[in-house]
Image (cartoon, rainbow, N blue to C red; front, side):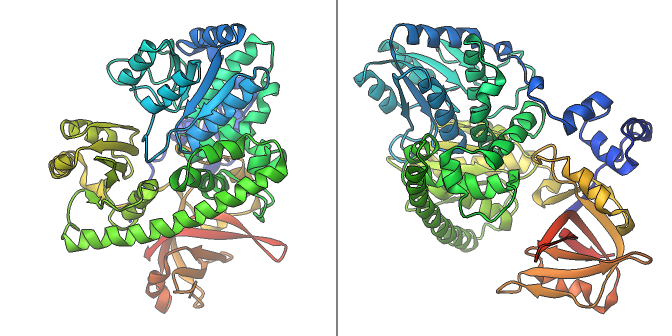
Length: 564
């Protein structure tokens, strides 16, 4: 692990902000590191307000989208809400369809089959619309590159409204409206919305057209917060506002589907981290193991008993998904070893029998072992399909673009992408991708980095600091949980490993002239030796509140440890 101490911001800015906010310089430093330099920016950060959401009509084509939907309703047309099978797509479809159905009945939903149709808008989906007299399709979390599909729909007199957040290509589809804040010609003030977030801006615009206020739309924010958490978009600007108020809905009055998913979770308050690790994988499991329709059925169900039945089925899908990703990860690691590919700049593996629904998870698991850009392929019909995942600060989308001569299609983000290719092109693509990455990646990016916000002493840690740090939530990209480093520590001598296989490390650390703190390092059991003989150590960590038998105490959750 590389420990990287973030540069100290300007002391003048830190002192000025500390004075304005009446906080100590450590808190002011953390804020300036996050781009918060004025009292007003700090107010928006600590007190996110729905009033700070942007006017949805600032988004290019929003007026066209609303006009087309209103004319469809006026003319009694059938509307199809289409979306991808992942969390972002299924929450977006649930959001827009349930909103429209609240005042218009002729609305259907469509999630493509991961195995039969693949990612994004499908010809099969358009044929379904054509066969059922549907004349308007609203596509969510997909469609920005579906030039041929939209042309196919236009030939059948089916209009499209695209709501996407992926990077557009050089040519936009010939749709009635293309809502995507990443369009070069779109001046919308915030371009990091997820697909469900773009869907929310659409219903916000429709709501304004019907004299609804933002308060009328609060009931949909549990879906938006779930998508923001799952899609790992920056926790800044509108995402931060929507996530904060969405979490409040999840914790106070969630829709029956989400209520059913968290029924057995023994937590007083759900955080974004809980959404990422508890709610999102279960919603995802429907599309991975069976069909994304099951997630939409759960999230749009208003009867709690029925929702609980749907949730129990999805719970089983999630258990099956866990078993599959463990098995395939073991096989993929074996393949890397057998083929002697442990020293490459990339990891690219393929097995025609691997389950398409879990290859993205497997790619993430492989990065945990071999920290480098990773692609996992499997057979899908007469082609190979793959999921790609990247390491911090390396743009895998650009690397795929540079290797695109061997691909049939691809799409995605800086850190995650999907693609298909012909089987005969697999080896050529694998070689080209390795060449591109080897020539463009900085060597430092091939070892995991721990970004440290500040070096502090144990005496700096108290209840007031933790109360202020808690107000930095919700955490996420560009607003991660603050990570600190402390040197010249010694363990009490009672360091021990925990877990079935001793995989975790428990310490009690002290500095000279300070009270000690309990510390836990998950997955760091193999570092026990470093703590012996009372040698000085350094750790980097986050500060946690640990509740045990009704008593809350501060504990250090350390990410790494080394001799000092």
